[in-house]
Length: 234
Image: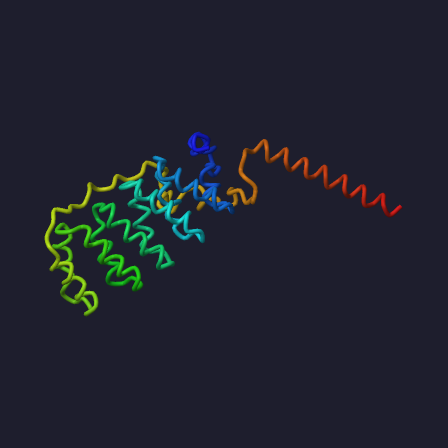
């Protein structure tokens, strides 16, 4: 099954890849399997799709998406940065925690901003994430002490008082190679530009030809039923 997903991960031009269709579909098990597959895809939009799945109603999907983002590593950093601004504090908090695991360059500054202005669960997660950066975050933390509110200052002092370690941020995240203007950090880029192209179906996406044949058969059955109903009234 995963081999099929890999072959179809890129999809046709202008159409959602198969793995994206499954990730945004109604079948929870397919969403979980899509999250597992997305974790290993070298596509720049894969991280954005995984961040979307962090909001899934099913815990196995959320857990698999989280593991997939860790598997993506630095490649997921743009999506995680975007996730910090998610309207759902649970998603933003998870993005903050994962940034502490991945530790991309630029993460300290983003986490400090969230620590000052984010919702309380996100701020708490940002503190934990900054602790993972260790001594590499100390200069930026020290610079934020002046003017910080008492709650923030207390946590910044705790971070500064923690034993120094050798934790260092990883290398800067390379920019994704994609068409200009595409917001791949949000997921598959064509969906934002043309959402009407995304298939909305409860059935498994098994190909355009199969869908067309299925529609034709359904229409034939409907005609036969209609004829039978009309004949019964004669």
